[in-house]
Length: 201
View 1 (cartoon, rainbow, N blue to C red):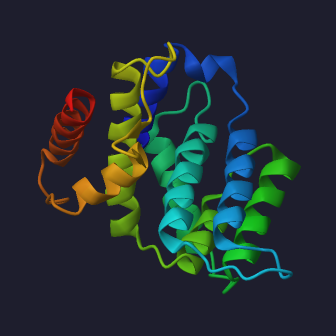
View 2 (cartoon, rainbow, N blue to C red; view 1 turned 180 degrees about the vertical axis):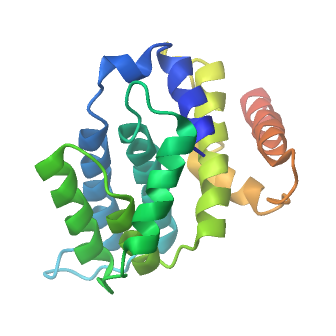
């Protein structure tokens, strides 16, 4: 996932690590969006949209991974640090809102990202590592797809056939084998076919 994130970020800006973008800020903003999907308004009836919550968890992971990159540190070294943090961490048992707030607070206080606190959020959202990987690959592919179809230029159409591309992604991924070595390529091909059909008709 770190390798895929580096490739995606390099697509947007070849020297992205040296730019010191505020990845922590993107992460905590996504935390706010997650809470919105989960619900926080005690003064009105709300039901958590857990599918959207998990999509926001994946978005947070994209920005969190990016925040862990620093000049001169290899992907293998970053991966080892993540594993070490996760192995040393005792799950907190926080609920979705509390885990999200803890992660956002850490991001704001440190201008960084905590894989351990992110794991608490994963557990609260009932997302395991296999699910994280499958969803991450899908969203990473969608991000490439968006770039290839004019996202940066503003010409990409995000809603097809009355639904957002994220929704199409979830539906298409459910039909594909996430353990296949060409899983990412298959996701891209499925997106391309559906996008083409939507624009054509």
